[in-house]
Image (tube, rainbow, N blue to C red):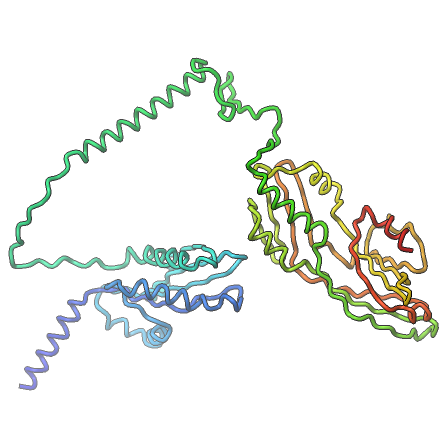
Length: 431
């Protein structure tokens, strides 16, 4: 009796095993954060949850996690307990963030052979994770589509009820043929029109269309290759000019530490001064460039960001062109140590340009080794304007020696960025 019962149970388990049929076992583990940026590290598990939520409704896909993967790796014989024809895949994911863009790479690996079955890449924006979720899950579905077994339709021993079917729309084939015929007629009309333009039967070809002149095709660009003024771009130009004005006038943030004064060991009448300054771009500048301006191109190389603005979307004035071409936006930091009467006792000029050294004075110290580096640069060409910004901090230590009485009189330090074109006049009037 017990033997018969065990045999019955074995048959039931066997039939249920065969009934389940082959399936795809998908091992989804946490995605790798390539940039190690902590603020987006949550996406590593978030992508896993997105895929699991989407694939959970797929009957022929069995989801597995990190623990299941470790178990199958330690005991590969567990694969033999799966229904015949089943496949086991490991989904490896990596992601990185560049500005507001999230790049994701996917790799599907066959666990049985450790060969790559598929590889895909996708991208989305950090502010639209829901759209990125849809793109990610649909990509995974596409990668698995050819491996998921299709369920066989069960045949019934009972006859099917006859159901009255709606008559077929005879107009379907007719409408398709009409569409095809209409498309052919349109193409023929366009061809005839083009040929008429070539032989001059329909007048002159529009200026933005290439026409055949002898053995050449010629496209007329007008009197000037430069984009003409367009009133529609005034709003874009106004925003860009406002940002460029701030960038050229006062783009830097400065942090100054209190200077230290030390007696010179070789000369007791002289004091050695150490003054630490940190230069950087203002925090909001890059944010404003990213969010407010309709730039046409953006390139990032480490801490360097290059924005491109095409002239066919902006009305650049001649004044801004000349200011960029001649470098009138460049400025030089001038540090002034003021005495108790608020008069300049010492001036520090941080510039490698020898032209500024014309003024010689015991109160002026020049630093020609380019300690301060401009963190912003403009380039204007025939068709575009480029703005390069570098989001780094430049620590600078100015060291110099001054007489003891001068050091005792110093009460305040000020720092001002003076345009290169105005530097000579500024030094002459300050001293």
